[in-house]
Length: 213
Image 1 (cartoon, rainbow, N blue to C red):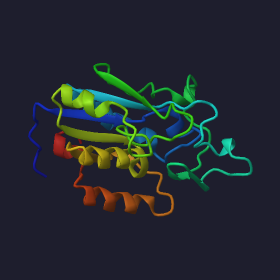
Image 2: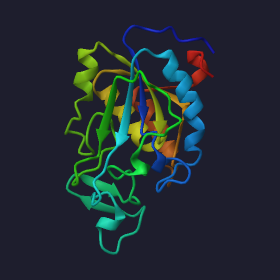
Image 3: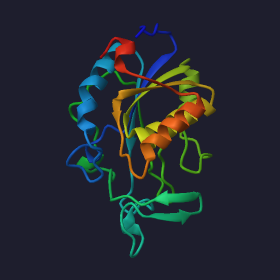
């Protein structure tokens, strides 16, 4: 595979590499911790790194526990659309919400917290799940002159997918480093994510294309 030439406007975006999404966490993604060595190597090769962090209040409406009689992974209709109900996870100030200790990106320039509004979930690093309420990330990247985003983290079929789709919608180039991601893969969500990313013009690559395999 040909090596991708680096550009001055490149940035690495590491999505939700937190304890609750790793084995032993309340919403564990299978093999979620396996990507950390790759992510660390990627981070060392990028001068610009942004980390995202799910950061929910205890009674967040995406939690099944906030809906009487509902169970995790059921769906409900909320004002902004269909919402999958999740186990309580990434609650503000808990160990589960912490970025994984083995993650090594000390030069990261921004840690973006998302999902802190009780009434709405937030998969994408760019918008809440209404796809209209911005997080401010787009403006930050533009003012810093970053135009090409390499995206890694958890989970490929949810937060990584929505982040990459929104990046493309906002005019950024988006490349998903697929071997530095893991997926939940629930009800065909992984194949749907791959198709959606292709439709959006987001490219799937692996770490070898960046010399970090």
